[in-house]
Structure formats: C-alpha cells, structure tokens
Image 1 (tube, rainbow, N blue to C red):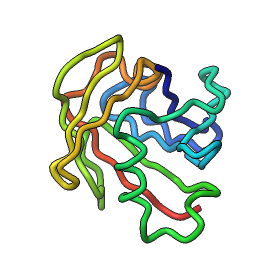
Image 2 (tube, rainbow, N blue to C red; image 1 turned 60 degrees about the vertical axis):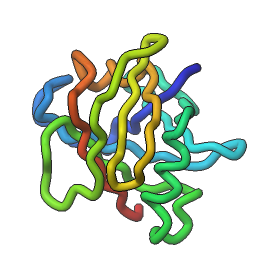
Image 3 (spheres, rainbow, N blue to C red; image 1 turned 30 degrees about the vertical axis):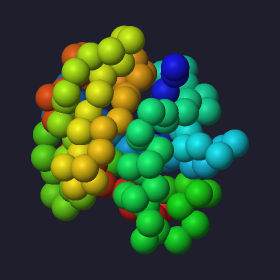
Length: 131
C-alpha cells in the first residue's frame, strides 16, 4: 500500500516537520480514489487508502466540485476551526491506523505521513476547504 499527502507551493510551514506545522495539501480524485501531489517531497498521485477515502468523502460532502480538488489542512496540534480529529490507534505495515469519532471510522495512513511528521502524531486535526 502507498499513500501520499501534499502540494508544496501552498503549504504553510511554521517549522519543518515539527508538531506545530500546519500543512496544506490539495487532494483530488483520480481513477476513483483520492490522491495528491507533493513534488517537494517526491509524491505524485499518492493515493489515500484503507478507510481514508470514505472519511474524505464525508469531509468534503458540502464542498462543490471537491473531486476536482480542495484544500486539506492538517496538523498534530489543534488549530482554529479544525473540523475533525483523528486519534492514533496502532502501527501496521509501516503506516498507522487512526480513528475518527466524528465518523465512527478507522483509516490507515501510509509511511508518506513521515514526510510531514518525525513520528506518527497521537492526534491529527483536519479541515477541508474549497479551493
């Protein structure tokens, strides 16, 4: 399994790969799943897999044309107006499983997570916005 998160030119970076960074990526649909590009860290059409696409569908249900792209903000620390919180559950196959109480669902984030965090955060705060 592989997975990617990012779009560098629009990333807000407070401190590289630190827990207080607010990251911004721009997922879009490709071949029926959510993917993103981040050439800055070597990711191209990195897919979200294993429960994450279903969470993203719910997260963007009110964003018009989200399939063509939207802004996904995420951080290991809470930020103003975050929408959902993912809570770390366990490590598996080099990636990490997270749980969303908002959606009562679990999803796996691949090792591409470590392009953004030094270690798997215990919590990830997320917000989706229209482009």
